[in-house]
Length: 177
Ligand code: FES
Image (cartoon, rainbow, N blue to C red; front, top):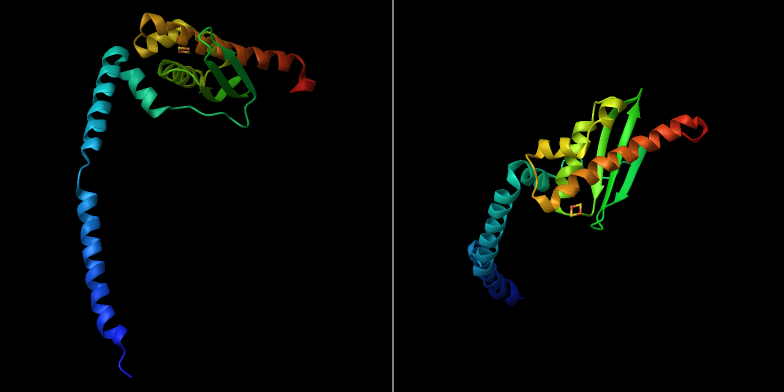
């Protein structure tokens, strides 16, 4: 018996498939004017952010180094700034030395950069050295911040102090370690 489907439908479906894949490829290669607009807008925002905050803050905001809650931390500091943003600093300590540090914040881009600097500076330091990392140290490492965001640096440094304090208290009560 003559199989009409195999004689007619097959070449037609093949042609259709070729056509569809051609259209898909064309659509994929077409730049949506909206995409162009969004790309340009983002470029402009990035440019202005860099101008205001500098390269160091911009790169830490983009890369979010040391960001994340640590599951095996020896201690954690948690503070909320007057602005309402939360900062958390996690430390893993061994022999009174910070082996690993990380941070978490739900705050602004500047607070992300400040948390990242605090975690990086604290890593490898003994507790006395780590406790000397203050807001000014953070500001210096970032090359400064706009006046209205300087408090983000102090929030991050004070949260580090809160973490160290928690460790000291726990060490004084070893049964709670
Ligand atoms: Fe609140 Fe940056 S930490 S504005």
